[in-house]
View (cartoon, rainbow, N blue to C red):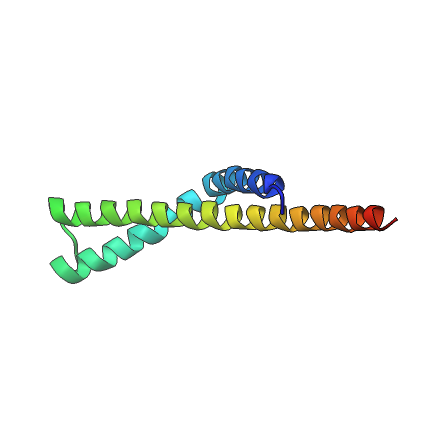
Length: 108
């Protein structure tokens, strides 16, 4: 392979698409799932009817942020890898045709 131009473009397009998909689909569910996990953790540590204390709120808030970050990583990295793979395959197809064309030209 001479250049990986299409693979780089696919990576950038995939990262942009992953950010858009995360903003549209992943932000709210990531927050909800992280919040439920935080409620379960805080409930097991401080007792089931959680009061208005600071520590349970911090645990729930931190787990919501972690849920959002995890969803963001999954969307952005996953779609970026798909875009890079598509670009890499296109590079292989494009340069394999160029190599066979060069070989036939040199043989004649």
